[in-house]
Length: 293
Ligand code: SF4
Image (cartoon, rainbow, N blue to C red; front, side):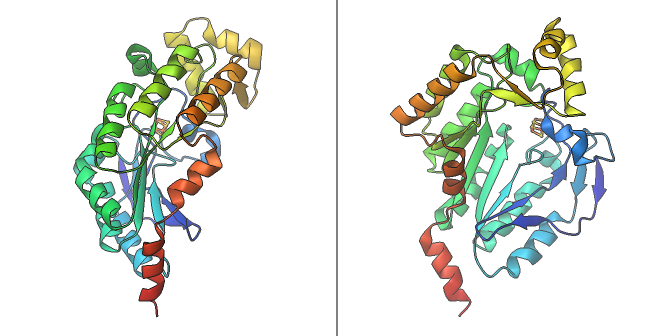
């Protein structure tokens, strides 16, 4: 881990601004796209870059913002990695969001988000808080291979349930689905059933498959060699160097996903999910406009 002073912390549009407090990630997911070369890391991916002035930058940005909006974190690295336990930068940023009455959206795989549930609850009472979790693999043993340094899917479902009890809206990223590994009906069906049980509002899944780029591909293939002997050769034979690696079961699984969501009133269109996440209650937007008069 190393510390830097960043120049800016949020970017986006007038409805949703994203921030990454950390750069790099210690969760160790074997398929992680964020480690791809195109993101131009100048340090090891696991050597987390900590933007130590993130709360100050955020406060300065929110103070000068004319319109309230959602502030999201977690797109490029998990805001609840191990280092957050001590550093509490995500928590401090949430406190600022709360103080300035903006909305908050966190995307994580970690149950450490439960530490901040009271704060998220408070934000949600005032404006809106959203918790997004990634669920890829229902089987615990397989999950511990694919996502080794973070809690398993069942524990993440517990987190979603706790959020649901507080009335905090939840969304799931069901991606990636890895060809020949977790791309089966049993896995998808189990995740979907749990999403329904814990009242998830929307599930984001563009397709049943995986993308691989330079940097990410090498890491993934190393993990395949370690845990799934012969699988790398199968991938190379069937996909070559392709960026998109759709599951051979994609049609069947996408159909299962869409029908199940429709039957259970869960948003399955990614754009509609994003719209729903970014949509602030009218009273907050109006209040903020009124404040400026
Ligand atoms: S949690 Fe996200 S950023 Fe971190 S290793 Fe996993 S896929 Fe990569």
